[in-house]
Amino acid sequence: MLERLKKLLSGLFGNKDQIKLGIYGPPNTGKTTLANRISEEFTGEEMGSASEVPHETRAVQKKEKVDLKSDGKEISMNLLDMPGISTKVDYKEFVDHGIDEDEAKVRSKEATKGVVEAIKWLDKVDAVLVVFDSTDDPYTQVNVTILGNLEAKDIPIILVANKTDLEEADPESIKDAFPQYNFTQISAKEKENMDDLYRKIVENV
Image 1 (spheres, rainbow, N blue to C red):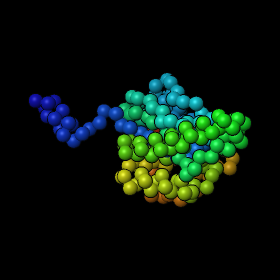
Image 2 (image 1 turned 90 degrees about the vertical axis):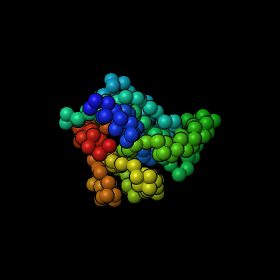
Image 3 (image 1 turned 45 degrees about the vertical axis):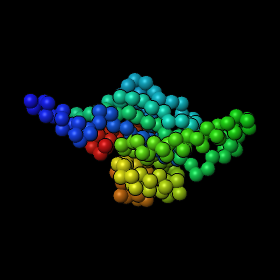
């Protein structure tokens, strides 16, 4: 009888078996490297191809049933690696990285479509990691817009200052720019401080 009551209450209050966790941020902040790190650690498989070329991820990449564990707690989630958010995608960005013009224009269109797709997903995600390159100025139009949209939709946010292994990294500047949000600093590439990120996901999602 008690078990039936638990199931009934679960149905009434809409508990979800799989939390949808979106990884957002501008291009080249290390979102796919982070997604690969999380996915590989808890499923044994990577999610996508990371590259120094901007907008390498041009469509939403999904990894279902990632059972993330931290401090004896567990959360089951669908991990979503989003295309980099940008106010404008210029094909010349690709040309500058050695891609021929025709291919660059194709990638530019795909990347623009990916930005739109990522924004649409804001209506579906349950929580978001917003990834910053800790060597860059955090207070940009793109970052403010991303955070503003998430806050307006009341979506839980964790700020992730990535690339802390680099000498010029200044993760504290991100924390100081947006002190109202949960924050952690990592190097997804070097697997630094990932346990703190996992702890914050379990605690706040």
